[in-house]
Length: 96
Image 1 (cartoon, rainbow, N blue to C red):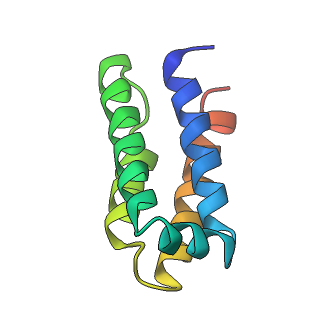
Image 2 (tube, rainbow, N blue to C red; image 1 turned 30 degrees about the vertical axis):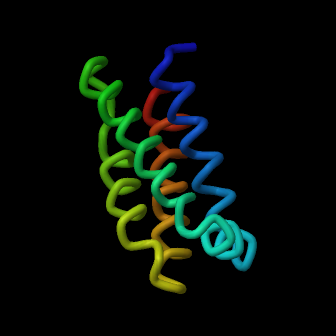
């Protein structure tokens, strides 16, 4: 399994957790929104590895956008869900 695939799976799991209603919001608020900063850097790492490996970049770009806008209630949930779906597509469908 490539390093890119591993970090995409990590990013996917992180997004899935943050997309769970109430749980994701509780994590974000209880960490003083630092969970979104961590998410941004996870997506940045995925993006850099995707650039080096000529891999798909859409999910990581969407993830960085999500990290910036996810502090908005409901919008954050929707963006985390969309980003998780994009990562799932890149990891499990696109690379087959």
